[in-house]
Length: 332
Ligand SMILES: Cc1cc2nc3c(=O)[nH]c(=O)nc-3n(C[C@H](O)[C@H](O)[C@H](O)COP(=O)(O)OP(=O)(O)OC[C@H]3O[C@@H](n4cnc5c(N)ncnc54)[C@H](O)[C@@H]3O)c2cc1C
Image (cartoon, rainbow, N blue to C red; front, side, top):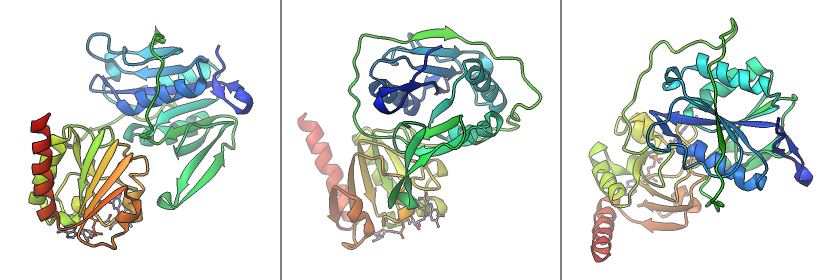
């Protein structure tokens, strides 16, 4: 068995990471986490479990670096089922004598990690802002206003890691070994199954996965105001996001909400339009790269969190902005 968690002095312990797929496609957030672990472990062996089948030719080809991926490709794992997912992870974690379990911070891990922490008797540290070291991790507190360091209290720990827009420098050339994994026999104390799944309509790309996010708030004035944002997002190859107000007003679906009670995003570019910048909203964008805001109020708090700010009415600024981007693209 490999011993692969980084400690101080480069010492390593034993860690298992969860790779997610959705509708047969690897989830970007977990691929990103796998690569961040590769970078930080500097070539030492990683171990991951991938739940569900992945489609296409060489579907795991995007996973670079060394290590072992246990692939539970059973069709019954295509849809998220806490009972089966929990059983596979638990059996591998215990069978391999692991002490740490890592997830990307996603809707799935927010559901599964707390339940698994009870079944495994493991401490749960969710929303870590970086990979854990020495069984501890840093987390943003008070909606990003402070940062604290937390240490797992029990000998087993589960960490969920927030997305990051910090670019990856990956060494190509090595690929992980993929080992097939079967669903284990279920036990009496396994997690419950899903009774009914409700699929919400979201934009073309999930806001949590997009490289460019153009979001709107109350300042967009209504659902029709978002047509401009859809156009801008399309031109920039991104997707549309929303503040909670825009969602509560029924202008956008909840799947697009960014923030404390929405999704955490880590795009390379984030453009906030008619969004004031409440702490609960900012909590969702701390992983973003370049942040741009358009707001008619020069004192709006969002401007304290931006790299570029534009004071103006979105109804006037956005059409000019879109026209300028169209002209620029025509020249390419
Ligand atoms: C427990 C809790 C959890 C929450 N979770 C979230 C969350 O996950 N995500 C989230 O977003 N919020 C969340 N909120 C709500 C949050 O506190 C704010 O109320 C919300 O983010 C405000 O949304 P907004 O910026 O769209 O609206 P407002 O705060 O009303 O801001 C609208 C902005 O638009 C500007 N504006 C108006 N007209 C124009 C125009 N024509 N052109 C340009 N600018 C214009 C205004 O100057 C203003 O700055 C949460 C609140 C609580 C209490």
